[in-house]
Length: 147
Image (cartoon, rainbow, N blue to C red; front, side, top):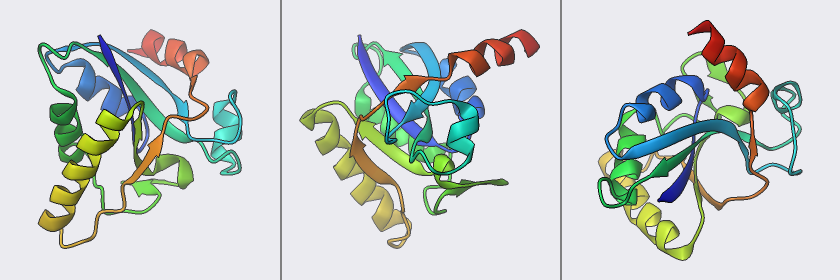
């Protein structure tokens, strides 16, 4: 199994969408890219932690490739809006691909470049190494109970 970590706005809807994709065996919502290894939803909402809301995906590369996941990432959100998706505004809702290794970084760079050509240079998606990932488990459990 391999891991992908993606920021594409509020994490709930992307988590649902990715959970239905063949080859993705587990999803988890969390925060990544911030100043500290632990944070809470309340802290992230202040805009001071630098964390993005993310979906962490565990996937089987024999069924779905990392680049197919990144291509789907671009299909299910607007990569041209800075620090927002739909009605959600703030740094935590930014479009960002967090890579775990050079191979993921290289794949993501190529796909970002391709998408940027398609969208006339308007892509604002960031590309960063995974830093200070932490789960949003306390909110995830409450959300699942409401489903």
